[in-house]
Length: 331
Ligand SMILES: Oc1ccccc1CN[C@@H]1C=C[C@@H](O)[C@H](O)[C@H]1O
Figure (cartoon, rainbow, N blue to C red):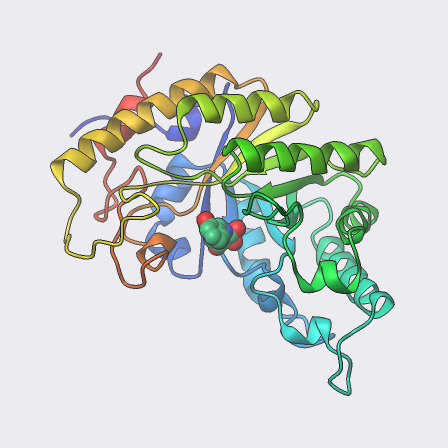
């Protein structure tokens, strides 16, 4: 049996190695988690709808369990996420009589949510995805249209960071987004973050979600994005890495397992990606995968519900793929 090295040990002088977890995988992948990872993120259980499902009714049991697990196993914890247009309950934007909330009410609720959540885990959560996905994917729009933008206005973003910083001045605060290596979106993320830094907003890093596939984004575009974000003097983290075996337009549903060509391409892709990430180890502080092993990935339901995917470094029997061996034997 191959002697399998610890992923996070091999990368200890590069960056932390993280994984998104949920109630099921914290048990089913416990061995892999404690051996290979030194950072965890709650995949869904620390999103607004799961922490404050009703106004002033906070449900912290699961988050408490994950934070305790991280501390027990000397892992860092990433808080995901405080302000996001998705997975946020409707009450946040609605007055008690059912009309649309106004600016001051929503700002109060944002401050309550952020200060209660960040305050509860003060000194225990190393970094927060304070704001998630506010840049629009279309060419002619800067900020994504959302309830936050419509009701509060553009300053909902800086307010979010200031609320979080007040609640835990030591936590590292991140702006997090996907398609972050596409030149156009990259430039808009850069513009937003630069404008926040100019206003002395407490923002310490950029989260590149890194939901990638076998061909996109190109290594050149990833390199250019890392360079551009690093030029702001911020730390960079990959926060949701997976390498889908399907490209964004491929809706095929016939496969019961990845083709041999997909396996070979994914192996090559992971080897190239980690060679590039190691080159930028001075600015990259953590690489978090959006899952542990192929036996559970959000991509089994996105963008095609019920379509199996095999995006991670451990297969659906929780065994390391050849790609794992390739990226842990560079020394
Ligand atoms: O790749 C995307 C394409 C369209 C919308 C969102 C995303 C990524 N959005 C991420 C994915 C999964 C969720 O669990 C994360 O919280 C979210 O940040």
